[in-house]
Image (cartoon, rainbow, N blue to C red; front, side, top):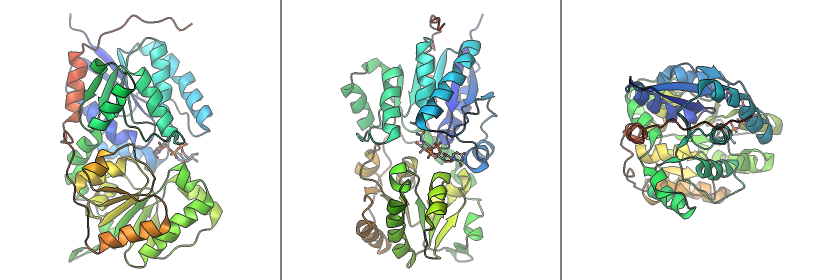
Length: 377
Ligand code: UD1
């Protein structure tokens, strides 16, 4: 009798969705795998969650834990509590988590304590900055998972240095770039350029894209005002489109920060509209992790408004420059790009659109062995 391997895939927050989409698609091509999808509900807004499911053809989650927002402890604890009965009931052969959000560590912890093996996609990335909540999530998830799928050599080195067994570590490439390459032709059809007046009969005008949502940049009104002051100076020369994350919106609403009219604050965008804008932008300014990778794959200059990055390959090989948050440095680095002095880059090895295939092949080769279950009571 043939055996089905039940894999529970976890998503919680927006950046998880472009990572899970190619993995689910690939698992669906293998009849011996039964992929289930569990959404923790960490993100729940239409623009942070639902629109991504529709545009990327991700199947409806089988279960939504509906945890919503809260402090780190509340959110993590609520996910732990709510996912355990699901794991007990579904008895998966494997739990697959992606990225570094609270959902990633919470579900990994619940699973390993039940003897269920965990696969971590995007393992080994390290900013070495423990003030970032994501860094804690990464270190802990990698200590628990036994399939560690890495996007870049530096991540492999980090995992080895932390003593993770070499047979657990696999350099497979980048599933987010799988999504980017798959959806780019669809993103080309987006009307967002016309809607924002960035494109006319002659083509696209020069513009920048800004995203900001890291607590270190947006949770203090003074810090956010300082960064936006620099962006305002840039917006006098080139329009900057700024899809505003809800965390950032809360601070902006409280802070009453004024800005230049060419700094265009808009609602968070769906995947295809955002990918379209990013691919046509003259530059991106961001504190996101994923956008550092996407701009590298697109060959678009990226200025990262942080002091460190957990994705060093985007700097050593890609188009990313770490400028930090000093306003004069942000303005100077932008002016350099607008003058045409752009850092050239290349796409890192294995960022070729086939990472999900490699991951599923490794999982199947590993036998997705059903383990003896541990009694959690
Ligand atoms: C989370 C992740 C971060 C990721 C980011 C992408 C953690 C620790 N952080 O940060 O790594 O880069 O997602 O967006 O997991 N909110 C809404 N609607 C939603 C969700 C949140 O309005 O659908 C608001 C809530 O007021 C919430 C705030 O945004 O308090 C922050 O949400 P939260 O999930 O705590 O963290 P993010 O900043 O989104």
